[in-house]
Image (cartoon, rainbow, N blue to C red; front, side, top):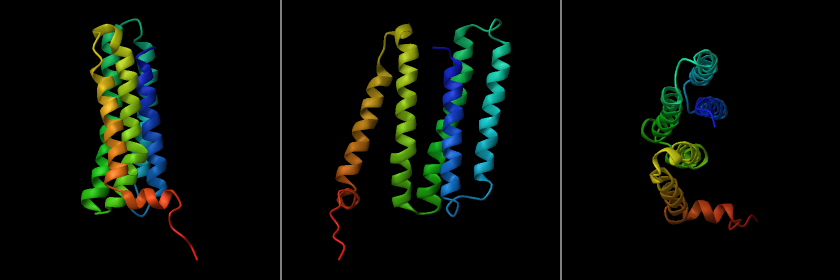
Length: 159
């Protein structure tokens, strides 16, 4: 796997987040989707420039600047989740956003980063972190949102 994979993953996260903010247009500022799309285009430009430096930089350096772009994308997703919860005071929507976008994005990123650096370091700390986030997500859905789960199971009867 090439280090530029992480830049592509970051671009995908920016595009998905842009589409989500378009769907939730009443909850986010009007320019937010455009800012996210510009960040995705910036990622593509980053990959094109990186292609020119394949021979100059080693895998180590290319990994770090691609990983930095992925970290910015993940940070933006978490920031949007905090914006929904703290600024807009929409706790239910923030929980749904974190369960549908934030936790899966962090989990997928942790898996691929641990797969990439795992053979180099022989440490599986990120895989443990991914397992921990999955457990936290499962507990938060079952313990803290029983009404949400009851509604998803079809527990509500419509007459």
